[in-house]
Image 1 (cartoon, rainbow, N blue to C red):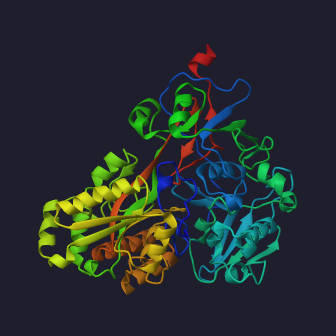
Image 2 (cartoon, rainbow, N blue to C red):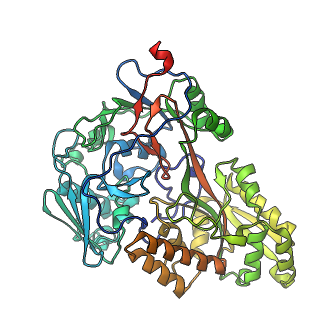
Length: 555
């Protein structure tokens, strides 16, 4: 669930410009079925690309990663891409998303099981897992961290991840309690989480990088925690971090699956264009690829870091708007928009034209759910417009000020004018735009959406469930509500995917939205870097990475 105005975690630079709307129910990964293997798969190594000369660290193996400046290292507060990427290496949650398997797998929890119709989840922690200071990781450490996130006094933006846990409102909304009554710890290695309603795939929510344990004494010295947090992940802080400087991590040998590299050095740069020059010179090993370099980077370094990002760009249609109550106008708008021009000319290859609401890269993605609705057909749009009364041929586009959104709005405006519509565009400051959406006075409005977990539910339930506060299109369908509800409770991947696809088709049949495109993230790694697996969440786990000496360094 994403609340208005919040960016999804681990967003690459191109997608960080999106307006992120909100999400009502927690997302649902398609692979989890309520139980999991007793042992987590290792982080599998993969090849890093085509050979080119570069140096490796002289003393031990060091992975040098170009990032923008991290903002904070407190897991509860991370929002920006660099902070999330660092926290992913420092901490280990109960579960994690495995990119290769395409499913949620055990992490700090070696296994889990469900009870009482998917309202109770019992997690069994790994034996021998410790924090970086040597203290044992216990179920109480997770419970305390979750309580801290949920507490009203914390004002944590990511508290929504726990709102299905029993007692959430008492803790988060009313401040009547400091403890989530739905969380209990029968012993040091068992964590029980009870939900207020069934949710078969709750373990996917727990892949969120903020839902990690903290040591009992962490908050007693908050300054130290913010500059040198003690985690339980594969890497630990090499020393205190000072904003503005590089951030160094070193391998934690006590981790259950020890890393292959000795250190990670996160080096801050103002943007991808600057860091790319250092990457080409061999001064950094991993960097984001600027849009102007995507083609050449793929040829030289391989496309292993080119991944779909679970982010979509849309124009929402307010069905309560007088003009848009006519389906012919909604259909004409969709047929008139040239999505390829937006993807290529404005986003310069970082966007793909859509094939539905759910973006490419999502488990269960349907390759052509959109059908002809998303095809550019101005002749078809003109015929539809001619059937409308002239008083219904006026459209107002609302968007957030600044580019690229202004450029997209102008492109859509020209497309709609070309098929016979009178089009006005209105740019708004961000807060004013949120007020406009909440007021219900918009007609055709810009909407960006980024998933924090790989689940079709993230894109369908918040935007189109009739009870969602973020359903700004006023779309209401008992059929869709039923399909989404059944999908969230489905016990198998096949059943879940089938229900989500049926819901997506039913939504698009009524046309409450005009999909514009979905995004990709672009990373590159030097050929000496092996085993770095980039994922659809916009980042990577470095624990499986290794660095091999180049031919030049062996001579």
